[in-house]
Image (cartoon, rainbow, N blue to C red; front, side, top):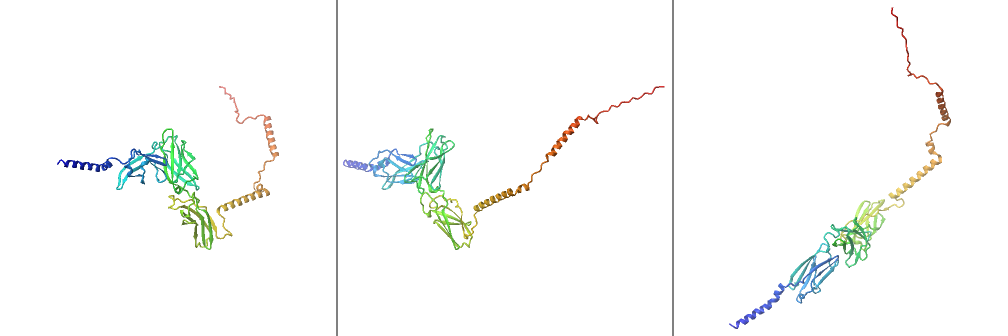
Length: 408
């Protein structure tokens, strides 16, 4: 009985050492301590304390960022960092959610979630960013100041493409408070319009810290295309062939990236890609008026707006006597009208027709005027020399004496 007690203790001690690693894995975390996310315009990093044990190095670590997984994280580096765009394509001005996972051969055994928001007061960052590209390569962006941004806030814009090229804006527009709310970049170098570009708006103020704003834009989605170029018409035996060149773009793209709409005498036809279009059996039309417009193919851009129509190109099947276009008719009418007016003025001046049509009204002779004046003076003198007559309205006082008869 005494010999059985030591063997029993030996079994207990052995079992303890065998179970100790398993208990430590469950009770002690395999994740690094003090993990934090730091967000900056176009850049983020995750840091942690470098108290990495040898047992932690035997596990695999990975990070999930906005449904993007980065595997084989080097936990001994004590840092994970990346740029946007790059392997990551999302904006971070609203904050970021991350998940750290620890894996072994049997799968995930531990996870931890992290969240972070950029520095700066809420609702101070720029809002409502919109951009458009016109005249091939002029990028025009506008935005509104944050709802709680101080009046003295200034915003600066920059574009970073997939390859890391950083292009700041230098031509700004200001609002009534002097804040920069618009920017124009002319032919930005090293920016690929067909790739995703990261646009960042960083604000600054003396009153408070301003939160940055960011967005991912594919500039081809905002290009306002010009009509096709060098449109030409070739007509022969009731057949019309229309040829053109694709609109000019910042990058040299193939014809297959565009869809075309062709208007022939008011009838619209469609053409996908290519640079020519043929029409048969035109029934001996005397002339053709052709206009074209273009838009991006759906697979090339999200912008499905048509360009404006090109100026009409008119072809005449009888080139000996083609009718004049409307603007030429107006010019001819103006010249003819001016010539007729000049000729009429010349005739009126040459033959004094104006005087014959509108003769002058004759004035009375001066001798009759003098006689009238002399007669008026003579009449006045006679009146002054003649004694005045009694007026008809003079009172005449008459008296009569009546004799009273004597009494007898």
